Length: 300
Length: 270
Image 1 (tube, one colour):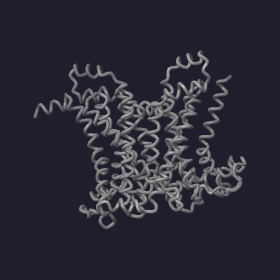
Image 2 (tube, rainbow over the protein chains, first blue to last red; image 1 turned 90 degrees about the horizontal axis):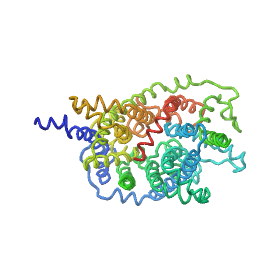
Image 3 (tube, rainbow over the protein chains, first blue to last red; image 1 turned 135 degrees about the vertical axis):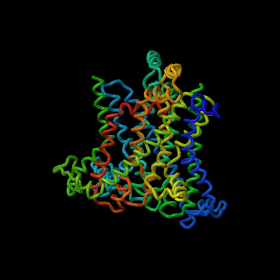
Image 4 (tube, one colour; image 1 turned 30 degrees about the vertical axis):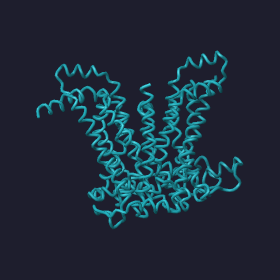
């Protein structure tokens, strides 16, 4: 007993205790709900059986009705489009800005940091601001596009089912640019300067240096940024809540918002947890790939 | 000369990028008649100060107070559980700690909107829903704790082990060396991370919306959503609300931006 006490106070037991305390918290409040969620997706859960501990098992019925639902594939496709477009543009614009701010000029790093102002504000407030910018009749975006001659008629960004998803994409790209830019900047700093000088001496032009040196050297950073981008894009909820609420008629709905709607607005908790299980599984797979690839880099 | 052209370009990019923030502030200062003028004006002709009005009529003191309570509670739990864990993960490298780190990284990526369903059902069964703000704090702390650990761990890794060993030779216990040597030296990292977690939780929406039904306990994000409603027309008021909510966050950010940016980049890619 005293040996146990000694290791807790003075030995490796001390480190283990500190680590396990936090892990225990996470197991209770994250891992357990995760497993419970899997269980619920095989049960009949509605408002009546919500509070009871024992609920009837229904096998795969929740998943079957989910796959049969006419909303399922459109929502999954929207999610793919949403994530794909957001990643491409966040990465592209973020990379461009990171390269730009890589140059030496007064106040550069301070100005670059100010971009994060968008990232730090509550996404719901960003959604409110964008909703006002997107407004059909009095919105400033329509005005700017009209005066630039890009559109003739006012675009109804949020109520047109053909467009509403892309409007949320635009707002989310805006939110995601600073984070991409900052992470890519860190990667760019890691590339040795003398490599560029040597290449310039050998007569490589700016484009060749970017294509043959910067991009290959940035491969692991870009991989990390893309995986983190997928993970963060799938966490986006507040913009959907404030801009379109998945509408009109699910035209801009994505899986993470749909799952919440099923549970908390339609009270079809079993379906909500089935969607949630599918998406959580996907997120965890991406996260495992990301963690394994960054660990690999460290050993190399 | 070239450096000043670059500076001008950088300012231009920033201005374009931050235009939505400008539009928020501008609309808040416009009178409601000017808000719905088309083409819109880009400088208020007759600036108004509706801040007190909106703050009182939209019961913002109650909403902001609840957000503050949730942010403080979340940060306290994350700092209490996270600091020690970050320290242990920075000091010890073995297979057990690798597994702990891996599990923590896995739990960092779970989206709140997907976890809301099981957490709501579970909390409902154990009765936590009757104290909804506590329920949100517990759930949100589980969401941000991994990030706290990952970011703080890098600050502990920068402290030389020898300092603690010297203290141990002088008779300090492990706990004493941790609390009196390691934590004070990692103070900056812990504080910056706490501020980051605090700001994030101050804008929390999913859990608050899912678990708090009583209006007097709802947060500023939920209040803003209630204000927006399905057929919004009071953009003037909504932007005023947003300005009151966001300005303190932006001020803290601008004051600490250098430290937040470096803390974020150190942790995110390691």
